[in-house]
Length: 302
Image (cartoon, one colour):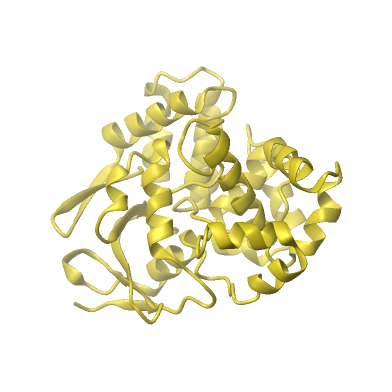
């Protein structure tokens, strides 16, 4: 076996990530809770269907192996790191908890859980369109139908992992998915944006957040909520408070007794995205309001 290695700077639990994947209904991956975590996704830029096996050593180091026990490319390893939020140094989060009892409580009850993101901003953007103005369960069913009918199955460890179709495939079949007429050109616009690099994760992360959000909102059908979802849960931006996420703001008001989430979130720098994720995950655990397992607005790969 020729494995790539990712150093998990700060506390990280791959087991917690796997439970998250297994409990998120739209992913259709209840198997993720047992054995090593296997992820399927389209590799950014090349759009090749890809699958990896991810394991955590006792030392905390995370290993990533491709099909036939081959070592995946550095680009694929980087994408996996972003999906599991391993590309962010989490060693300072305890200090945030020391000045915010709410955060301290979340860290104690969900040790090592980091945001689990979509395979790419492209997949996040597709989900944003599919789930807009429809129930999560219905959007999830459509996503599973797209994967089953037009995706690719990649075998790893003798297990087939279904991978979402590449942008050119989605563009071609968008009109055959039985979606509302208004969503067809929007899906094609997302496919074009991915192909043209507008949805490239590294690019989105490298610019100021406001600039990337503005660029995302230029894509037809992508509004403020969807743009934040793509940047935070697709590109894995580590330090951005979602201002359009009303359920998060409701949770913050309940916890902190204030209607000013921006001021509260200043205490969380440079981990505003992660603390927001933990708050929403905890709210979903208590309420089940999104009907998709723990922590709705995060997302998972294939």
